[in-house]
Amino acid sequence: MSIIVKQLSKVYGEQQAVSDISFTLGKGEVVGFLGPNGAGKSTTMKMLTGYVPITSGEASVCGFNVATHPLEVRKRVGYLPEANPLYLDMYVREFLSFMAQVHQLGSNSQRRIDEIIELTGLTPEVSKKIQSLSKGYKQRVGLAQALIHDPEVLILDEPTNGFDPNQLDVIRDVVRNLGKEKTIVLSTHIMQEVEAMCNRVIIINKGKIVADDSLANLQQEGADNGYIQVSFGGLGPDETELLSIGGVTHVRQTDAHGWQLYTNELEIVRKNLLQFALINNRNILSLHSNSQSLETIFRELTNKI
Ligand SMILES: Nc1ncnc2c1ncn2[C@@H]1O[C@H](COP(=O)(O)OP(=O)(O)OP(=O)(O)O)[C@@H](O)[C@H]1O
Image (tube, rainbow, N blue to C red; front, top):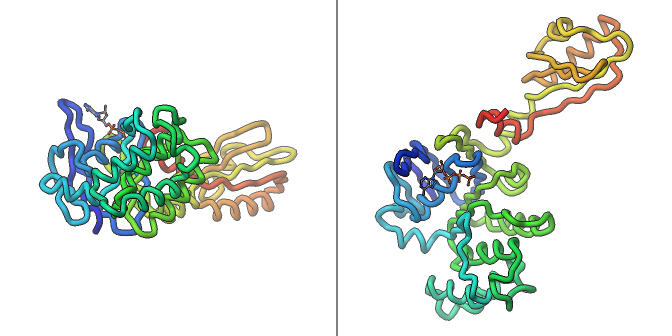
């Protein structure tokens, strides 16, 4: 296993930031670490990379205990922190050379720096000072420094922060390609990014893990949940009649003719609704199924609805 986390907790003074979380991640897993502001994502990432001490529990990365072997861990982990602290006065190539030295890449340095510049799309900006770069390009430099030593594990705290839609494609491709070989944990608030890059999702809320599953399973779980938007012509049914349709849990009127029928058995309710219309001589003008997105699942699990 690349990452093993056992009953990990972090308390800052009075603040319980992370509370007794456990998970294991293997090679090739790209995990979306999701949670509302203040959920404990950054704190967990800082503990995994050895940037803040663990209060209780333990974590190991590539077989090395984070607390007892921090240097071994840092050799194997690439970390893009949320704040992305860069040496603003340095030129891009100069900074990456410096990071290559820190990681003691030796004679491989130049080749590796060139590779990373190409990979992260930094070529047009490579001769500029970091301070003069746009936010998105600064973020690319942060990603480049995280990758320079070809780490087995990547921990990326909101890596797409500051990217415009075109730049997003670049980082998504980079992460997807790297994910074939490495273990990647990335945090984001944007569900589409998880859907585009990750194969597993861990949702954290108030310091606790509230979901940990493959993206496919979570999407499948959401697929049967949702509502049917239906519009009736002429005299439509009332609320009581609609609630009598098998599988409908609750209903909401959207306009004079339109209703939303909520269910966790979308397909069954669709069939029952058509039968109901036939038997009761109701005229359906339009019918549309809306299954739950990952975003809805996230909101439900983190109590934001
Ligand atoms: N250095 C610190 N001292 C005290 N409290 C802290 C410190 N760092 C984080 N916290 C608190 O710990 C909790 C978790 O914060 P954390 O930054 O890990 O959340 P997050 O999920 O990364 O949030 P965001 O999405 O806003 O970045 C918050 O209540 C935060 O205020």
